Length: 206
Image 1 (tube, rainbow, N blue to C red):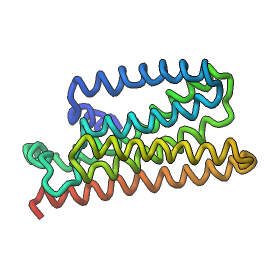
Image 2 (image 1 turned 90 degrees about the vertical axis):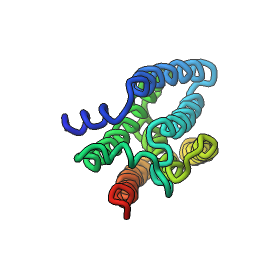
Image 3 (image 1 turned 60 degrees about the vertical axis):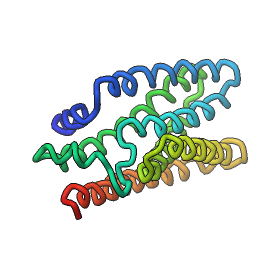
Image 4 (image 1 turned 120 degrees about the vertical axis):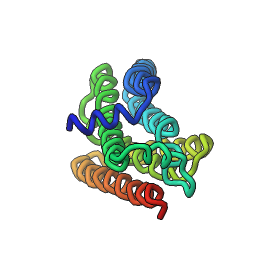
């Protein structure tokens, strides 16, 4: 794990670390608490939506165009004999960061709201759509693509959480939690495996 963390930190810039590890969580927690203080528990759903969109938009900074036909990232990877391993570790650790960030931000907001019942489900829904959204956005290189996918993903988060919390489906919460846990694993495996297949082809000029 220490080696993976080191690869991820080496792959990302100092400004990226500051913004993604410190500023983004702090800003989202602040906004989330503000929304919750006004709208109560409904604010938690809005926070999950903002978190999903923020993750997809911020991915443009580090992995933009990674899976596009002509990715400039290949030149960076070719300068190191461990380029493939560094990339794989960075992809895995970035997904882990997304997951921990989702749980951390939503836990703080739920603590403030005094409502704990939906933490696992909300965090996993946000993670699944942020992972799936970043996977799709990496096929394009423009920020506009990330913005569009981020907005769509945010509304999908809203739709899923609304169906569970507002439509009488709460009694099936455990089933939904298991479903999104499984989807989270699937999205993670797909994101890393597809990206590495594409990166490998570019790395070896295949």
